[in-house]
Length: 170
Image (tube, rainbow, N blue to C red; front, top):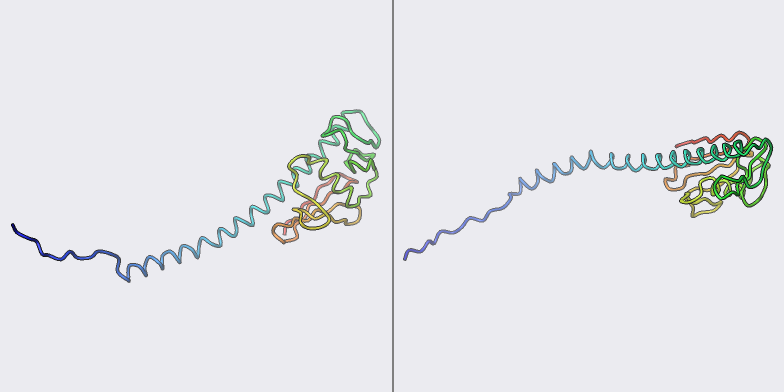
């Protein structure tokens, strides 16, 4: 019997090969990380735009129901919209829910009521204090909802006089 006493040569990566692979990964990471950060920013902006669109659609639907009910003056608890509890101004724009206040001078409570009454289920959280997805403030007679998740000060504003929704993304 013949024995084979040859030593097998160990196989693996050389130090140079490892350094080259690490360098390539570092270069790829340098390009990929800023892109991922930008995606996060775009996601926040899309969330704000989607919420503003939903609010605008809800406000328009409330007015549409007010018109289709044949009203021409302020009305409490518009039947046929949402939970039949949204109050509207003389022009048909939502002004409150539980307050039964049809005046267009808004305060934080009425702003929250409009937000929840118009957006209904799965609405982002709102409050005058943190933690909430949107913080409520008043500018003039308008409701201003400031997005909190990205700390950029982006806002959605609602004007109960005209039903206008204005979005400012920072």
